[in-house]
Length: 379
Image 1: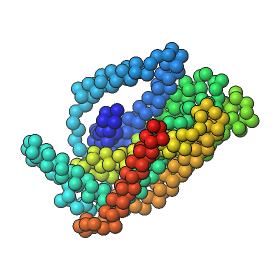
Image 2: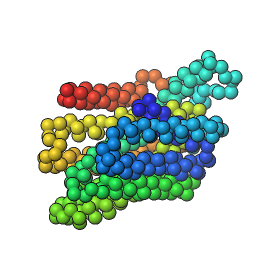
Image 3: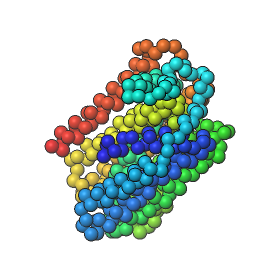
Image 4: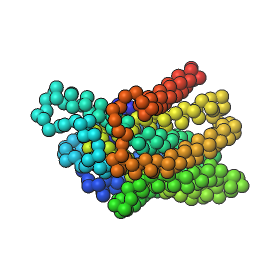
C-alpha cells in the first residue's frame, strides 16, 4: 500500500499544475482531492454493508484493487505528457545554474545524471526558500489533527451513540458531500482572487482550521450538550459536523497547488515528494500516540470512551491551531519567496542546513520511537 500510495499526490499535483494554466490549477487540484472525500463516503457505506452481511475485508480490497487497475489503464492511455508551466516565483532572481537542463538527447546515462542533478537541485532550492520549513511543519500539524480525526472519530461516535445503526452511513454521506463541496469551494475562491493575492490558500487553511476546531469540540461533546438525549445529540452532531467539514476542508487543493507553483518547473515533482514525505512523518504519529495512551484501557469500557474524547479534544484542536498560527506567520516569508528573495551564497553547513538536518533527525527519531514502542506494547 505504501509503494502504491507514495507517488500519487506528488505526481498528480505536479501533472495538474502543468496541464492547466495558473488560474485554474487551484480548482483542478481541488477536483483531484474530491476523491479523498468520495473515498471516505464510499468506505462508510462499504463498512455498513460489510458489517451487515459479514463479508470479509479482503473482498473489498480485491474489488478496489481491480477498479484502481482499470483507472490506471485509462490514465496511461488518455493522459499525455504536458508542456511545463512556469513558476509563480520571479525566476530571474533565482540561481539559474542550479536548475538542470533537459534539452539534450535523452539516454539512460543522461536521464540518470539528470535525475541525480534534479534531486540535488531540489534540495538546494528548498534550503534556499524562506517559507518552506514553516509551511511544511504547519501542514504536518494540520494533517496530524485531520488524521487523528479520520482514524478515531467514526469509532468514537459509534460508541457514543450505540443505538444509531445508520450513524456511520450518514457520517460517510456528510464527509462525501460537505467535504467535496468545501475543497471545491476553496479551489474556486483561490482561482477567482489569485491575481489580487496569491496568499489566499494560507488564509483559508489557517482561519478555516481554527474555526473548525470549535465545531470539532461540539461534535465530541454533542451528547453532553443534549443532556444525554441520543436523538437530540445526533441531530446536533450532524449539524456541527457539517460546519466542521465545510470550514476545515477548503485547503487541500489550494495549498498543494501553491506549493507546486512556488517550486521551479524542472524539480517541482520531487519538491512535492519532499513536502508530502515530511507531512506523513509528522501526522502518522497522531494515531500511534493515542493508541499508546489507551493501551491499558478496555475498548468497551466507559473509561475508554472518556479517554478517547479527551485525547481527540486535545490533539485535533491543538493541531489545527498550531497549523493556523504557523501559516499566518509564514505569510511574510512566502511573499519574499514569491519575489525571489531567497537565501544567497553558497550552501555550506550553516544554520539553515543545520536546522533542516536537526528537524529531520527529530522527526525521524520520533517516528522510529513511536513505531518501536507500538510494537513493544502490543507484543
